[in-house]
Image (cartoon, rainbow, N blue to C red; front, side, top):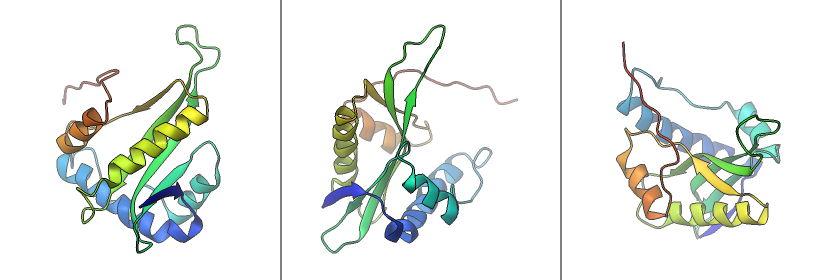
Length: 155
């Protein structure tokens, strides 16, 4: 397996994976998540081309994209409370349901951490929905700890 920056040739496979990740959210919280795709092909092309939104793919030996990781550089400037640390936010990690258990997610995560260090980031953050205990356990196994918790009351 290799992890590399996503390219235009990966679009169809990434779009397939985005359907899988959205389905997890839709099934878990249909009151919040539509059964839809997060990005159009055109939006995905723009994201891949933007240096502020690096996207990585994990490619199997046969050349098939087994998973992806979407990231966003963030830095609070001129904030009255927060320090201006440079953060790499993981917007999405998805491993194809047929490739789970093969360390694809770990390869993506480790690559993202190394990339963030090389880019001079202070930390790497992400949000994980409570409806996805498998993802929560995965991130904890990678060494992540809660930074903040979002709560709700449904009216």
